[in-house]
Amino acid sequence: MKLSPTYKGLIVGALMIIVSLLIYKFRGNFDNNLQYIAYFLYIAGIVWTLVDFHRNPAGDQSFKHYFSQGFKCFIVITLLMVAFTYIFLKMNPSFREEMGNNYRNELVKKGNYTPQEIDTMVLKAKDYFVTMLTSMAIFSYLVIGGLVTLIVSGVLSQQKRN
Image (cartoon, helix red, strand yellow):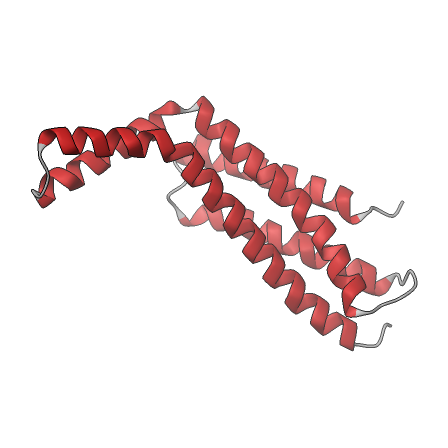
């Protein structure tokens, strides 16, 4: 059975979510090098999609068609990971509170703000916390996916098929 790029994206995205949850369960946070396992899976999923397309030609093998295959894969993974990020952050308000406390401590150490200004700044940061991290996830996954797809598509579209 030949899997479409969309299904490959669903599989890889699900694996990335599982890995992320396992890392969080056993480490208690995402601030460690183990999170690169999820990024490795992301890149491997895109490469898998493009190499599979290269090995099983289905018509035109131009750069445009390679990129299209990779895009179908990485956009599905990106959607899954962004949804996961948003849901995870909403279900774990302790992250928002921890960020607020850390931000408050930084502002107090600087000594440039009144207590009312600090309270206002921390409140605004908490209000935008989920939006900010979700936006960062969107941007990073799109950039990484686009670059990997661009590079691998360029290389494979120039090679002769075996």
